[in-house]
Image (cartoon, rainbow, N blue to C red; front, side, top):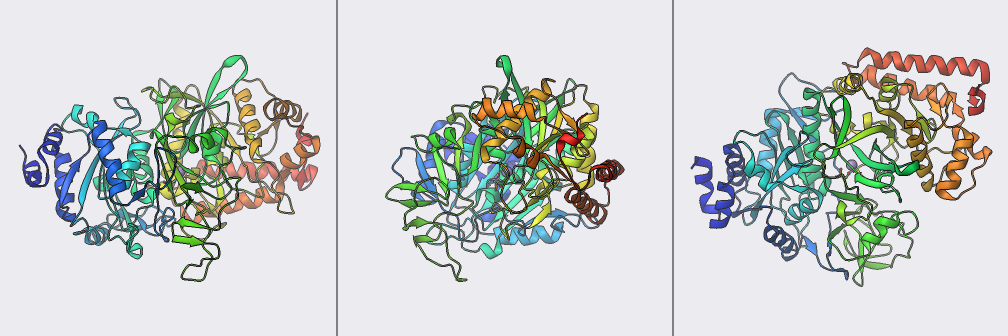
Amino acid sequence: MNNYLEALKWKLTKPNYRKLRDIENPKVHEFIAKSSDLCQSKNVFICSDDPKDIAYIRQQAIISGEEKESLKIKGHTVHFDGINDQGRDRKATKYLVPRGISFSTALNQIDRQKGLSEVKGLLMDSMKDRTMIVRFISLGPPNSVFTIHGLQCTDSWYVAHAEDILYRPGYQVFCQAEPNTQFLRVLHSSGKLNKSMTSLEDDNKAIYIDYMDSTIYSVNTQYAGNSVGFKKLAFRLAIRKANYEGWLAEHMMIMGVHGPGGRKTYFSGAFPSACGKTSTAMLPGETILGDDIAYIRDVGSVARAVNVESGIFGIIKDVNPKDDVSIFNVLNNPGEIIFSNILVKNKKPYWLGMGTEIPENGTNFSGEWHKGKQDKDGKEIPPAHKNARYAVALEALDNCDPEIDNPMGVEVSGIMYGGRDAKAYVPVQQSFDWSHGIISYGASLETETTFATIGKEGVPEINIMSIQDFISIPLGENISNNIEFGKRLKKVPIVFGVNYFLKNKEGQYLNSRQDKHVWIKWMELRVHGEAGAIRSPTGFLPKYEDLRKLFDRVLHKEYTKEQYIKQFTIRVPENLAKIQRVQRFYQEKVSDTPSELFEVLDQQCKRLIKAKEKFGNYISPEKFEW
Ligand code: SPV
Ligand code: MN
């Protein structure tokens, strides 16, 4: 028996001791023992993959009050986060870096020693009268080339329960692994709690990433994006690992798109939070394999992808019976779901944009709520938070893709990038080649901040490949890794740029939410060479006739030439201004930008200027047809 296991013995019941003893990796014992010692937990619960352990966690989440069984439908519970803990907290999230290292001025970083003593100070004694729960997770399907092992210690039963819904169990994986297997570690504490069981000291929130030790510390927060370690926290470490090993860890959904003759073609897509990623993956008639994080590897010179997770932590705002049939049904039927930050009234959940009238009072993240209630700054509190969410297992959806646990992943034929861009990019376009797509759609992804992160909404920013917040290496390296990855493949996925948020001069959206389904079907045809395209300065555009047929077939909607021209007009000044912002960003903030990025953007500028000289500032797509 090693010393760490011995040291833990008095905090473990016999069954828990046995569970831990069956994992031979001494580093596992060490991390648990040191975490428990730092946080001074009263005892330690080791969660195996046994359904009894999982049921115990769920029950404790309710007994502790972190979740409430205040909803009528069986299996549904509600969790509330504190009023200042309703999204991913960028300010509180920092990379611990050794002295002399700098990733980019675009990232939050802190001297490693200083950060470690700060966060350990906050964690010290935080679990004094609580149980520390230990969860083992397999990121990606177990026993596959994609698998990464994860271990989290937390004092939140809610976090431990959410992990059960969102991730694949990993206890057996740890038991079977070699004693020296590498794994990611997360230590989380909700910190002091108030009467409603939400983190009290949110001013002292800290989410620190120690990449040197593959460890993440998170304290004084409960919002899942800051506390469920296998979501964005482990993702930050995975991006780093992927970069060094030559594969990709991406903020991407994965979906199977159904084409003519019953064929299915897989696409992955990167969108910043609250920009349509989940709703794309869930399109009716298609299959969803993942909605948030993908690992993509070169397997036999082909890009293959797995979903790192097995559940969805989805935005519930605007989920309505018309646009989101499948998930709306899931949310209204028995089954295990954790709702967070919604409004509860008469045992029913309510959220913004659900298509039903919302009551004027009830219980929400602010406690007892009534219309007109204000926060301490005099701001009106909405009935449900915009970033209210649901956590549900993917297998609850009737269109969950059957390949979800395939250890080889699925072959990715197309990759899409999309942000909130009101002005420049057309709704869908295909890149000229891999590098052009990675650079002018992925690395140039511009968007507006949304409610999914704490802070002001609607602020335009560059969000490289939609993973700006998670890149834990010099930013230029990440772009080079992407470019090189595609260049090594024999069968290169086609890269598309999409934009669901294009507006006219009057500020109205030019597309409806359903239109994305047509863009997806067009991409599927393009992958198989079954739709034409027009070569524009920014990429290949769809032809009107192809879209007209698809609108008719997919949405039973008439699609006029006028709509097409408005949506696919190349807006030269807006495109040039966008490129300039992107160039400036890389010149000022990313000292290791690969020269190819500037070359590709330069060529795009030249093409735009040439087109402008010939056709003017706003160019109908038909002008490029010949
Ligand atoms: C997102 O906001 O991109 C999410 C939820 O997927 S979070 O866990 O907060 O990252
Ligand atoms: Mn996400």
